Length: 309
Image (tube, rainbow, N blue to C red):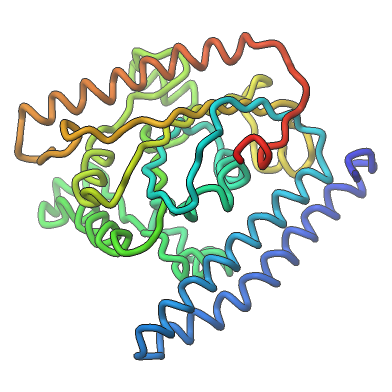
């Protein structure tokens, strides 16, 4: 609709509207969070939790609508069918850019339970957004370097404790738990430093996935394996805002959570080896799929919301 506006006008306008959208949604979010915190009545707190999700979904929907209006991005989607808003999912995805997050939010918003990401603890200090993520029960993880753990061994396992506390809370609400299995965004430098055996991916970190599956137990009913490709190469949030991302390709497949995927990853050596093999196989298949997705010809733009229905 507004994609033909000159960039000098369009980019500041998009950034202004995104900021206004944040403020308009975050302020009522904080009001209902305060009510939830101070009210001892369980029914009122549950009602506030539902209202918070409605506000968050509205926030995402408006952001997605603005990107539709101000960009000419072509979407090619495969497999986004039979999704359940009342289902509980573990969402696994490759990670290349912060753009991955609005992409996932756009295609899944109001199609599956609200997506919650594991965030670095430093992000809680981001103005407005950090407290909003906290209010929406996003788990914040404190990562320690190998040097810090060597100097302070008592910190070992603290991130897993935070994961378990978050998962205990998630067991009692409709949820989609998001995990970027590589643990960090892909860059050629990281790829080379890892000597990654994959062409398009970093080495997967199986421990976090295994821990979530074990902590959530039978509360999760399926895994959503998501693959995102940007055919024109690496991109940033500013590229998205400026409308410089011409194509986004997404592949989705639903995987069952078999009994073999549950076990004690830390203490059961045999299970750990089986689980690592499963994750490595998943990642090998994803790497091959990414190669095919890069080779696909451009097709007519698809509506992510319609394709996800």
